[in-house]
Image (cartoon, rainbow, N blue to C red; front, side, top):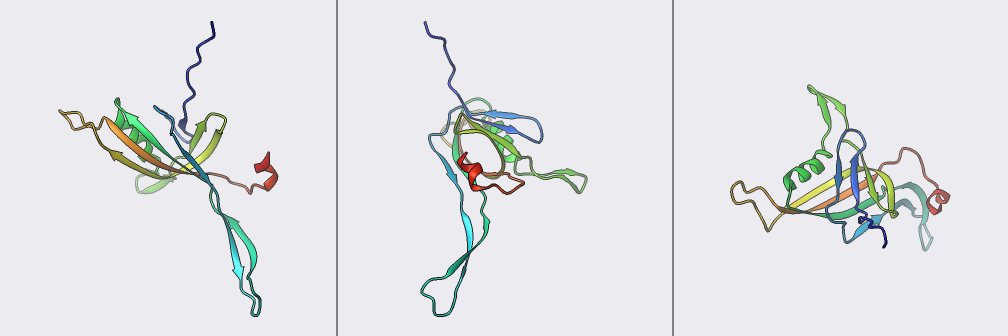
Length: 156
């Protein structure tokens, strides 16, 4: 008899504080995008501009989480909290927390900032409190990198 292995689920881990969000359901699609900025230099008389590399744009990881039953509101609030800084009185104490995004071998551990959380509550609401029992949450993460990465590091 083979040994039972539970399915691998994705996670978000608060890298600067406490808390982990294990995905109830893995997203059916994950978009991983990166762009680069070049300055187009127009030279009089030339048919095409010349390009000068300026800098890379952030790597963005975009996906939808589906939440069903249980503490739906609390899970959404945890995700939304990652957009807010910490204050000591009126002084900024810490920027919004970074997260580790783990999604199996595709994304074994990517340090990110949360750029956008868009929650849509629908379908089922608890009759006595109107607390949501179902939500779709669109997440936009941007990879947090504090040094320049070169082509050979990306290719492995």
